[in-house]
Length: 135
Image (tube, rainbow, N blue to C red):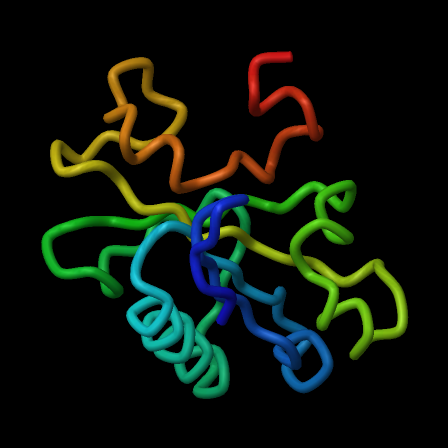
């Protein structure tokens, strides 16, 4: 769990799912770090029980009344956000899926009317660095 600071939103991610289950690691941004930790643990428990997770998968079993979507994190983001995972695995490649949550109206980050206050909380890690900021 990485708490929110002046540089960016808080986030949480897993380490060990790839090693133990050959399942992608999971990362989540912008909510309370303890809640994200709980949600990722719930997904991890499902993986341990044999559930499959994959990029572009929509899940409706994680947050009540709202789906989440899993997106493949571009490896160019790993050093910025996932240092402990790199230390554990010694080096990429290992897959990471970003767990994205919608705004209160059920729109996701890639929707043009996605709530701006939510947009700042979730980086677009499936895009090349620079693209997510409109550069």
